[in-house]
Length: 397
Image 1: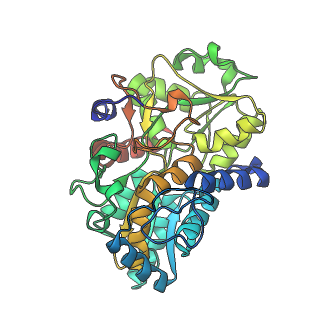
Image 2: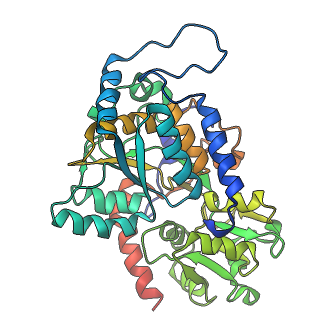
Image 3: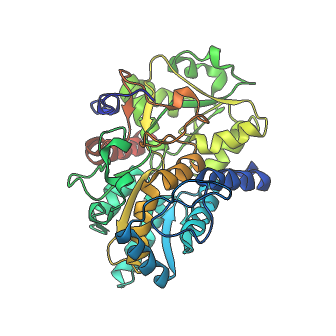
């Protein structure tokens, strides 16, 4: 990524898994994530684990963090919610366990589904979750607005987390109005639509207008824009850039097939059920590409590229059953080590500037001076996106 003040690139515009993922592929992803860590089970808490055969002085211990880890190990486990992405479900718990010896119970699935469960549990006085990795819509509009979260900033004690020099924004990037509760880790650029290049070569889709060709009717898919998830900000991108008339002609006139299952959409694109899909994340697309399917993201000249966070916001729940483990997790996931595992498994670029992103195509890395459509801005998400969701429900009737 380019250096400089990233807030210029990240500024929002006004109103502006897959069923084919091979078990071997999951194993390779986990191995690669753990290899990046260079860590081993039983490493001293608060220190980077020293690879076998390495030389040099041991990193300086952090007594406060060591004590926190010791307390967390007595608790014995942590319970978090996170994305359904197969690699993340596997790699994050494995890496956390290897680093601290603490078991992680990982509840994977759409954040919006989890919200209903939490509402019922909390009404009954049950508090089962310690932390969450979620998307902006549910994190901002449900978890935060319902006051289920506690401030995270006081729990961050590792220098590599609190020192602004490690962050592209010049400081750790909290999104909430209080600047202390909802941490944004991921900030990556993306194209608005994915295509099967066998059916539709990327160079033949220059603008969104081309999607209105009658030959594509019934051949387009999209993550459902009437619910929280990737489909809503993607649909908003088209709506804001092209207007309501175009949006209706596309989604309704072209009989776009909606789904709330990203695996199903990715499978349909690979199996040529769809020519193109709107709102499909790279975490679902890339494993299929590695399996040899001709899929790619496409830039449209009349719809801006997005700056997204995917499943990239992190928060701690109040009344956590494992409070020390939750604080250890917050420090770890925001550190170079944890953010590396998380960003690789989600196929997304993080906001840390000390991670090796050589694996990521250049177009994933936000560039200075580009007018991205930031789908994770607080004001846009809270005050504009939810009304648009209700609008889309009405338009699709």
